[in-house]
Image (cartoon, rainbow, N blue to C red; front, side):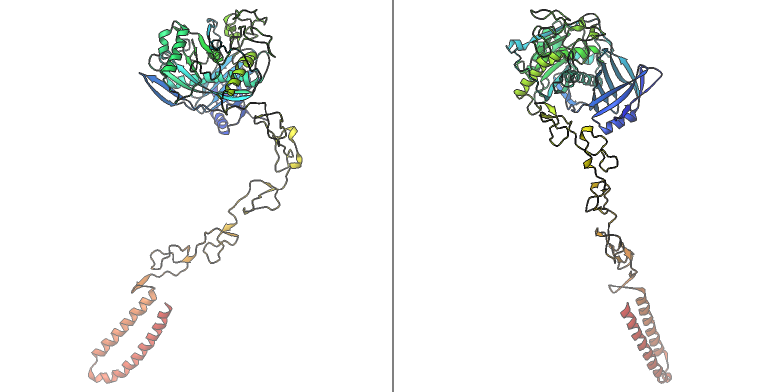
Length: 622
């Protein structure tokens, strides 16, 4: 059973939450592909299933000021997860310094944000619906001008693709004061602007993949098996931008955007090979609500694909979540849903897909019932926000199935056929492609990492696998003799048939030479560590620095260059003294005594001779 992670605690204010940073650190350390979390929600508990976003963005933040462009790497946002649920979509950002959730309820069309207030204190707030603005989108139909309106390829082809995007930020949005309403800006706060664009890009990816990959669509649930990554960079106009000279005309602004980036781009193709340039603005003085060229993926007819989204909020409000993916949809070959150009297919009889606006073209209106806040059937390419409940009529993050089938999928197929996504996609049915796996799918072309393998379900076995599926149980594979199977290990077990990772390599190694100081009787393998006895006193004349222990052989003194000991010196001194005494005695005696002393001298010499012999013997032993 999947562990449920409780990452927030309740406070007295039901809209305020306390983040459990230790739990976030644990999740970040594990890097699990899927997790389950619980969030306190309106006196209840909301449980969400999250799937880890596999790709990471390595784009840059560019800025142009006084004709010069600088760049830096975009900040790392740690781990991003998509909400993978029947009822909810959206995403979660889990980082060591910041956590963010955008949660959309598909059933009742309510949307919520969870974002940081200060330290570990977070706020959950509902995203409001703006009923005061009519969505007036202008489409410049490039495909019709190219006489390329035929959808020549309808069949589903699975693929994993990456499109590249420049989010262009106008001077007004960069410099205007911060605020919660429209016409606000970021007051030159790069960090907050970058995070804002990060959320916008996730909204775009989430919407595309809900339609193309997850199968959460209206009116049918279809999985086209296409996953889209958006690799993006940000460009900020830190001096007045060229587009601001045409605020009273949306088409003039779009033309200015295209001419600027085609003829004198602030970022060259060598810096970033973009497929799209999308201008984002919060400026309410602009005539632009939304405008885009309707073109194909990777279409170079205009140089690149261009769009503008206007009247945006500096927080992740529902308006942003609808207008920006809407304009992106036009860049990806889509008409409005009230267009007469939609053909009959497996999901539709032809003509307009909804009845939310006057038809574009000469055809009868759709007979589909109008959406409402309680039945939000409006989709991202529609004008269903222009009456009644406004934005509440439209479900965030949802493209119509027919839009995906007749616009996105054919455009993707043409791009793959033309090599625009060379070697990035996998075309064919997804499934397990490993013939050894117990869920091998012979019809699958693209492996989706779903392969499962036969295993042991006996809890007493060494190789018991608690995660094995019912269809993959094979207890003939169970092994019960656990131990070390490495023949080079000290504890090798010849009877073991399953390595239990207990092998160790230290207990049987050591010095095997008995004469060594560190001889180890139990060692069976010499490890080259042996050290031998010798003189260990550094002051001795025969000191041995390689000696591992003392053998009592140290010699303290040197005589005539030869290392000797104390006994030799003492004997030698005694001999000298004896000779001096004899000489002194001989010279001091009178003549009358000499005769008598000669006898004694001879006797003394004999004694000296005996002592010299004895000394010689002692010297031999030194």
